[in-house]
Image (cartoon, rainbow, N blue to C red; front, side, top):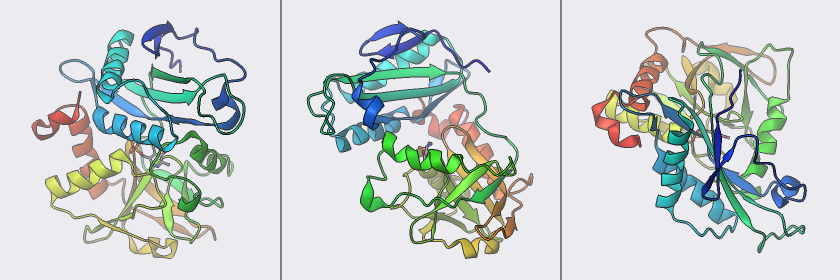
Length: 305
Ligand code: PMP
């Protein structure tokens, strides 16, 4: 699958896709000092529209602040640059990746004074993972501890943890991983938040602290309340409690709502779920979410740009 699009936006100009290479001594390349976002835009009855762009840009600017990056442009300018990049590339739907990083000029760890670059790429990404219910394994690698980083920021360095988890290959038996925090509670997937549903449709999700506060997570919490009158319970959940749930699903920008078919615990005990069923709550909220992101639900049209 070729994800290539014609242009990448960089520091207020459009460069050709193949013409954006960085210098070998780019600070970011050595120490991972960069921040990013993952955003989706959707084919709608009008023009391609970007879902919750303002919220994503706010998280990006928060991440940049955590990393002490002095930016010489505004939130509004960055929002406009993202919209322009989508329009310029002519794709109807896909993924958007803004990054802010320290460029060439300083080689010591303290990077203040190095030049900051900002780039926005757009690529074609129809499906990130299977649309059917997936198999999940609890990883042996634990989620990074909140005392060691800022969990609410999308900082490149935090992703070494997610990649390490994704490398735990079990002969292709599993499609995704679930990380526990250092105290043994359920945290999140390497790139997604998790929700669990009881037989009487109570919905639970791990509380903030050891997880990225996902924008899809917040959207699903709001939609469950406003559309299905369900108050999500944000709390600590032990893996030993998994068998008391009937459904489980992941939420993430890249793949929206992903039903979970099974979670295999650290001790190889397997818990099965009915999340993939046609009449499951997972399926219901997935449909509501997909309608909202494709600008079909009047009430949430202001979430799209
Ligand atoms: N957790 C982690 C670790 C992530 O990287 C992501 C984003 N890929 C998420 C959760 C989901 O966040 P969002 O819904 O904002 O995409």
